[in-house]
Image 1: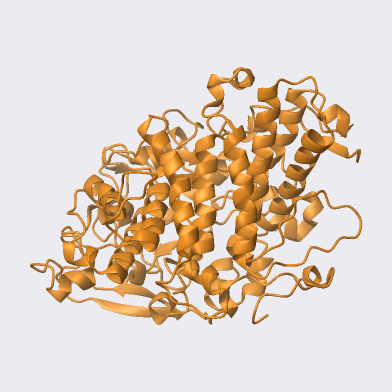
Image 2 (image 1 turned 180 degrees about the vertical axis):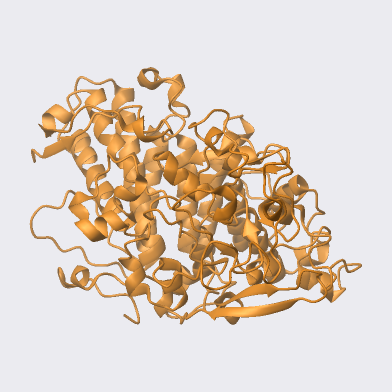
Length: 624
């Protein structure tokens, strides 16, 4: 038996209670022998909790500046930000960027060993690369201790099962976090000590199948609901963020869908955006079916249109978990100030008054290509005249749009507030060129594009949070790692890739067409047009557009346009603004930047050079 010395912090039940700085009240850190750590369920769970703390919160893990949207969907003009470096193809800088959740400023400035998981401020915890490697190692310590070394002998079988179930899940999850950005990666299934050499697999699929086995094992071992288990009584009522069978089903499906997507399927040699690995997609459908059956049983539920804000920011009490009935999994909570900077990242600071927050402006190209019309059509399809009367008017581009456009995007003339205390210039959005809430180019507070976004921003009875109407302290906005809408969207994509739009699988009685229409019905727009459904490629385009709208500004876009194999196409490289005078007499699309993106070079982050020199068999990503 390898007897590890383990630094253990007993934080059972506390790290998962989403609150402010005091949420990590804990016993002092101590160094214990392996036998002591795995002598009791409580000690072992305390060690497992550290893996939860290693899950990176994309929205608040970037020092104090919210720069977490790396796709074509937003623009910021700060040249030192990670999103700006991505626009110019400088992925070497992004991979170790001090203000990026991939690395974070604490790791970069003070060394990775000083990035501590028991920090209330997420930007002081390890970034994605370091945190994922730590998480993999911790998972392997748990598995080795319980399965190979036979520890936890005094625990019940149920207690041993849930400790192992969490470890198997996290081993797969942390590999997936690295794979999303770096591609194929060695699957590490042992505690590495001394010299080692694990060759990099030839394909992404090899690693994904290893992760799939771990997710399957996790599903067998994890409970449906911690509150219903004897071991869950210790933290009864505080178990929302813990791993369950439903969480494992969802991430099992995501792992398989990503592995089956065009980029991974082409293995960096070729790419066809409509060509998926149908075997993996069929497997993904069956995995997603597992959590959708739990939805049918009442464990989850899609939010209604009227209650949709509860998924993003409208929490029942201050410092409680958001997500409502759609909550599947999230990074742990943390610093309230950081959460508020995240919530306000789409709105001019002159309105919300939150120091340290900088605006990230929605791009016109993303808005125009994805947020369509009230008839359910994209603007392009609406203008074609092939699917019925045309609604889009180039002289009135903000009229007759998809209700989700008005729900999540701030447009010129929108009322911020009516209270007498609000200065007149801040009562209405002035997003026309030269308006009060448009950037002059010398700052980064007002919008640079003619839009702002409000998905995570508190608005009660039509009154926005502001310096003169301070309601933000009552709520907590969080970017979730997984919510139920995402599950249905991935299910539909995998199912259409494997079987088409109108065929239901044996594992669940829902077609891809019906799944997508769930969201259109919720928003109050018509179902997908039959002519689009009957065209396989056209329906895939529509399915992706639906995903882009529903998950807008939730940090999925950069992964999506890469895995779909479209990031290098001109449509996804151009970031534009919308220019128009105060009287709306004319409209012009203005090019802000043409992103640098070549296939396959800019589809994967480069590994740090020293990482590829540890041993033979670990080649660099292509082009670097």
